[in-house]
Structures are given as structure tokens and as C-alpha cells.
Amino acid sequence: MHHFTYRDNELFVENVAVQELVATYGTPLYIYSKATFQRHFTAFDSAFGALPHLTCYSVKACSNMHILRFLGKMGAGMDIVSGGELFRALRAGIQPAKIVYSGVGKTRTEILQALEAGILMFNVESMGELEKISEVANQTGHTANVALRINPDVDPHTHPYISTGLKENKFGLDMEQSYAAYMRAMELPAITPMGIDCHIGSQLTSLSPFREAVEKILLFREKLCSAGLCIDYIDLGGGLGIPYDTEEPPHPQEFGKLLTDMLSGLGITLILEPGRVIAGNAGILVTKVQYTKKTATKEFVIVDAAMNDLIRPSLYQSHHHIAEVSPRGRAKHTVDVVGPICESGDFLARDRLMPAVEPRELLAVFSAGAYGFTMSSQYNSRPRAAEVLVRGDTAHLIRRRETYEDLIAPEETRS
Ligand SMILES: *Cc1c(COP(=O)(O)O)cnc(C)c1O
Image (cartoon, rainbow, N blue to C red; front, side, top):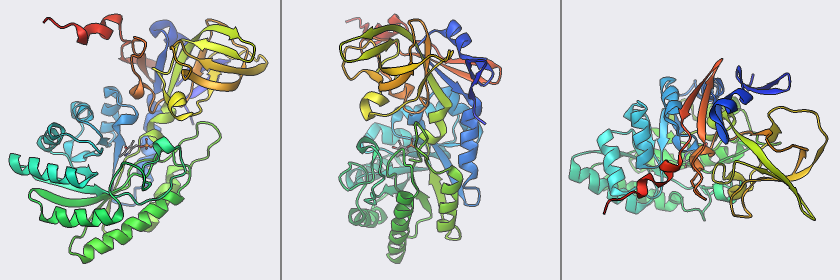
């Protein structure tokens, strides 16, 4: 079952026609399906049902408050990477004891905010951060639960910008440094070493890098235990991929089986931080064709969404399926789908076989739910798009379209 379907040559999100939503809310428009979000969360979370576990949705994938709230109600914890995401998670009613905090650059202020909130644990990414957390916690009368993010040096076979578990990446500590860091953590005041953390990359389409990482983590855990430090929490991060194009990533069920086979009976509580696999295919970006243009070598379809709305094609050369909202069976030809921004890197698709669309037609850019709106900007002074959440027969505006006034409001100083 999926919830972006054509009925009589009209694209629907659940039971609502995209045309109708555009008539009300305009373009560019992010549209999410609540049923799809829920189905993805349940499929993922239930795959680990045989293990003590906590599924911490990765807030940065799609961080709208309405989405965090209903995921929280379904039992999700949250994986955050900034003070701003902590603020969102708490406001959305997420229990602090279900929040884990990752990221290489946590500031003193952010650390204190997380300590005051009483989060489950910090995923610590450097020796300096470990010392800083200890200092802040000690000075303010808190105790910090920590996991050290180890970098297992496994190749996730994904785009270089989203691989994080290789030696050359900025994330985590290598195995030797990690061992020293755990030994240090045992001596530091106000620190409880509670977990081992790792996140090897994003958009993984095979399970073998996960298997390799878990094998290394389990050996490492034994080594720590021999040194008198027995760790109960293993956080495996996120990273499970989704089909954007022809990829065939493993089903969460297979991922669950792998980890259940490897971890059950060991007294381990597993933490997972899925983002893309929950949100990616739960959202589309709808855009209106403005112009078509032929040059000596190329044909362009110029649309009203741009790299400021969806940066993934420009940043990662990533593929997003693009289709007409109202298909008419026309012959296909090869075009570039580009936005109005003054950059040659502003494109949604290159050399794409598409029907000969015309100005004013609507196009749907699929798989835009994760790292879509959250990576958007106001570049070229373009107000950010609106976000709509569809649930069955109804649609809710969950973020209004920004206005020109929104663009300049923070600049209105009275000096
Ligand atoms: C981005 C991120 C995630 C989520 O990754 P997905 O590929 O979207 O599942 C999880 N954990 C950490 C630490 C991250 O940085």
C-alpha cells in the first residue's frame, strides 16, 4: 500500500487531489502523507520488536512540529543534532528520556540545555567534547550519560558527502582513540559511560556495512568489559536507504532480523536513529512549470521550485523521480528541469526523459520528504515553501508559506 497514487490520471495524496491542494496553497508546495509516515515508522520499529530497543527518529530529516508530535505519540524517541532540534523535540512533547544528542560541534550552551532537559544520552564525537560535557555537568550539578561515537572504518558504499564511518570522515573517534576515551570517561567527574554509538552513513542499500560495524562494535564491547566497563546500550545510528530510482534497499524487516540474530541474548538495549527511511518517501514537492526553453544543445523546463527548496540534486547529484500531476500520455523527450535561481547548479533533474510539458502544468518531485524542506533556504530572497500534511480525506497546513515580510523581519533593527 502506498499513498501517492494516480486516480483517473490525477495524482492523489491519500484521498486528496494534488490539484486541489495547489489551488488552495499554491506552489512550490511540500505535501506529506501521514499514513505513509505512520506505516514507515511502524514497519521500522516493529522489525526490532524482539529486542529491547528505542527508535529515535532523526529530527533533521523532516523536523516539522506536527510530524514530530504524531511520531512522538506513536512512541518514537528523537535523535537531535543541535539546540534548535532539542527545542523542537521538547516542544513537540517528546520525553527527554527518549532523546539522544549527536553531532561533532556541541557548544557549552547546547550541552547545558540538554543536561537541564534530562536527555537519555550524548553521543560524544571527540575527546574535547567529552571533557567539555564533564566540565559543564560537574559545574552545574548534573550527571551526563554518554555514548562515544566510534568510527568503525567501514565503507557504506554511498555518496561521499553522506558517508560518515570512514577513517577520513570528521565523525566519531577511531577504535584506538575510542578505547582511550572510554578509559578517560571512567575517571571524569559527572560522566556515566552508558553506550557505544556509531552512524556509518546514509542511503545504505545493503546490510553488509551494518553487519561489519556491529561485528566490530561487539568485539570492542568485549574489550571494554574486560577493562571493567560493561556497556548496555548500542546505538547504530540511521542510514537505511530508500528507493529513489532503481535502488533496492533491504526492507527494515531484514535489517531487524540481522540485528536480532546478532544481538539477542546479550543484554543489550538497541537504539536506532532512522530518518530517511521514515520520511523520504512520505513527502513530495509540487512545482509549477513556468517556461520551456530550447537552446542549441538542450531543452529546459523551468519550474517555480529551485535548489533553495530542494538542494539534494545540486548537492549530491541525487535522483528524484519527477512526474506530471495530471499525466496525458504524451511522448517523452530529454530535458533538464531547472529552477529560477541564478546558479548553473540549480536543477532538479538533468537529462531526464519526460513528457513534453507546458507552462502552468504541475510536476511532482517524489521522495522529497527527507532532507527536503529541512535543507531549504531563502537564497535569492525566495520565501520558503508551505508544508501540508494529508490525513485521509483532509489536509492541514502545517507550515504557512513564508512572506516577503518574513524575509526581512530579523533585519529590522532599531539602532
Ligand atoms: C543524519 C543522521 C541520522 C539519520 O540518517 P538517515 O540516513 O536519514 O537515516 C542518524 N544519526 C545521525 C547521527 C545522523 O547524523
